Amino acid sequence: MRYSTILAATAFGALATAALAQDTPDAPSAQGDLAVTIYNNDQALVQDVRQLDIAKGRSRIEFPDVSARIRPETLSFAADGAGIIEQNFDFDLLTPGKLMEKAIGQTITLIRTNPATGAETRERAKVLSTAGGVVVQIGNRIEVLRDDGLPVRAVFDRVPPNLRARPTLSVTVDSNRGGRRPASIRYLTGGLGWSADYVALYDEGKGTIDMQGWVTLTNQTGTTFHNADTVLVAGSPGSGQSNYRPRPVRPATTRMSPGTETASREQLGDFYLYPLSARTTIANAQTKQVSFLDVQGVAARKIYARTIGWLSNEDSAVNVDSAIAFSSSRDQGLGDALPAGTVRFYQRDRQGTPQFIGENTIGHTPMGSDLTLKTGDAFDVLVQAEVEKREKIPSAEWEKSSRYRVIKNGQTVTEIESQRAVDFWRTTMRYTFTNAKSVPVDVDLTQSGLDRGLWSRDYRVVNEDVAGEQVNADRRTYHVTVPANGKRVVRVTYEARY
Image (cartoon, rainbow, N blue to C red; front, side, top):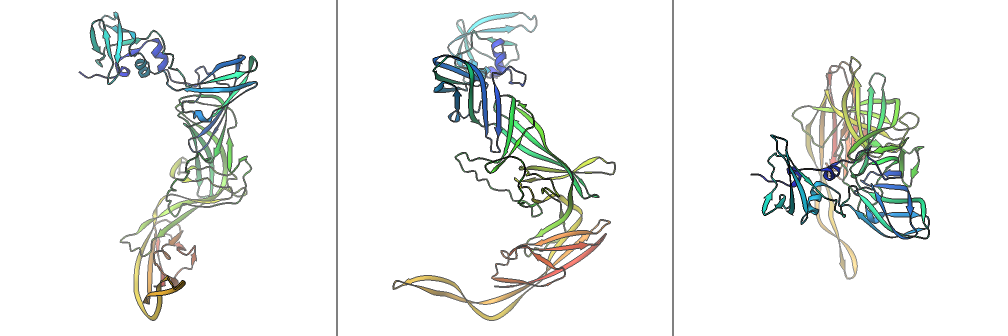
């Protein structure tokens, strides 16, 4: 026979039924005028102003319907003429399991229903244990409530005083007068979060995108926040712990050239604010989406690109990256600072139906930035990189190397540990481009590893079929036009001194 806890073995009466009820947006709430500020690091600021009757002298005030993930040490209380003396947060919530645990040593009523006749039998039972199952004493016998499918209800005489149906904050205050007045609490909580999602419709013929930005709110606090004035902050204020997070390694085709334009929206310190246009109810265990960006006809273009590692010698061709480039500038772009999120691209098929073509992520992006986001691999455009020739060219030069410093007689002297010959290496790379499209395409090929891969003190490009652009000491990019339904071979010779 298999035994289980009271959660599986019984269905509760009126008291337990209330405990099982979920916090819903329509449920009565004791909250007042709510303002919620949500940050990007699982942190939110809740400000709640309630109209309360406060007695003169010392009294206890309860604030039900606060977040179950409140950080009590961050609480701030304010009421005219009243000062806080003590605060308590009751987070031991009324649940079936907790209700049974608190009933150990007490007597409850078990109601069993005969499945054949529907007749009910009531017995008084003393709860002995809930460890691994519910053990009760009925008269002179000890019984374990079984998970045998028979209908059983447990009815409790009262709710234990230290259990709450809702998360409740209580404060002890000392007031210099009695009467009704506004009382406000302010606290930080986890469990509230938001992220940005972007839907971009790309028109390849017009070279434009239509983009809509959505804010996705999530609430895992155990509490619904009713009719709240909500502000989103793009940023993560310090929380006393390191905010360092390893940054994901993105494909070379995914890049952002930061802009220098100031967005017109409000700033808070070094963060941008994204207030919702109207008050909203943020229900517990709910995901809510609200639009914050809607722009049409932003200039955009498709880019084909691939980055090659140093001395790559491939047996077969590799599909190049397909990416879409656009700007967040005021004049020719989206015209806003973009909070971090995911950009999903769509394109219409021949029937005019938008179809998904890829997605990528962006970080917090200043206005005026140029973005290039990879959407996937190009089906018809490929590149194969090969080492066509690599030869060593000896040199008669000698170079002093491996220097180190020593102290002799109180003076610093530079000593030479060894000497070695300097060699030259000449490497010819062959890049073969193929294009199965009916139109020509431009491919940006980047050769990386020129500095780190060569481990060279000096290198140069001896010959190149297409003029390259030196991006930095490690990368050189070639813009190659590949004919329609055709092939093109590009050779580049590098020379390095070791």
